[in-house]
Image 1 (cartoon, rainbow, N blue to C red):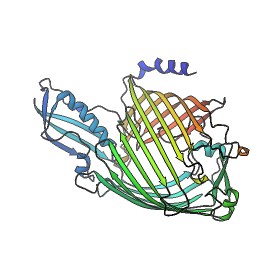
Image 2 (image 1 turned 60 degrees about the horizontal axis):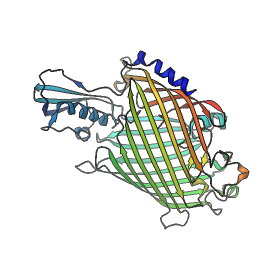
Image 3 (image 1 turned 90 degrees about the vertical axis):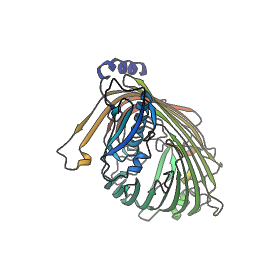
Image 4 (image 1 turned 45 degrees about the vertical axis):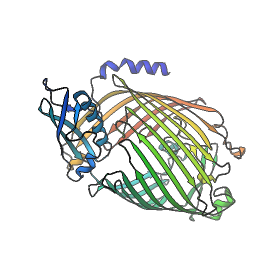
Length: 479
């Protein structure tokens, strides 16, 4: 099947090679046959930043006024700078132009179109891990939804600060407030964040059977969770970030849950209070974060739950992720994602177990399953071909920030595999060992639609090692 798909992808390459990417456009430059091999940057002009402070944009630039650059090098530097400005996610479009004042002197003009920064976005979310889990495992039960409103004030004060308020009802009642300040110093290297979240449920997964969550429904309140956090961020270079968080968690469940699964919080406890320290290192050289086609990302995440103040939990987690994106030319692209997870000690609360099946860590074709384990390895590979892309100006839309409509469509084929180490104490009566202690794999083909405001819609048809197949739908990028 993969051979046929690859042949099909390459057969259509000549028909689509001339189409430009929605987000991956080249730097504009004035043609001048008399341009010298080395040029000096005279002035850098920024146009269109009605709210965004100029220093927020200048922070992303590698080029500086008064500096001298090789002409060929300058084009590549400006292309990277354009991507870094785009990755701020403050603008719907970014254009970088060089204006030649003389053979050895140039100006840089950066023109941006700002996004809509205040979003009173309505909430209508599925509570399950993904659309496919909700549609098949939970029989697309509409009661398993959340509704309410998220109010985001992005680019607050024009400094790329973010204020978030969540008022959510339905399956999970949740109220949250957070504030992120990316830079608190003149050098724009240090930032802070803090927040509070409260949630309560009357329907809670209390165990896993045949690698699928089993839920308890009740008219009574089953679980209440509260968390307070303080975060610190250090950005010592354009591409490297260090983030540290200290969180206090206070959780409670009712007696019924503790009886059904005494290991939910361990030892039949109905209360769980603990401090958690988390450190995240990220080296990110992706071209466009919303839908990367070139570059790489490396991330290390370490969590220590339980710092000796309370005895409710003692757990560590180490998660390593590496992603590589390769432009194969002729509108072909290859992406590979590797994820490795370790945790300890052997005895851990059910509610805190790691598993394949959350966020980006799953094998395509196994979206319906939650494969719990203390250690796992995952590799995902995608080969894609851009079919076409365009950008339209929809002048009939009354709001300026929504008039630009980009769309790119990619056809793809993929292959994923993973290995999860079984939890020895797992009760075999629940058949939670059928997908552990062995390699599993999934393959298939699909279409990706990439459009405005970082929206990615994916349609995939997958085949698995167990000779099952099915159609799967996703509303975010692969990894």
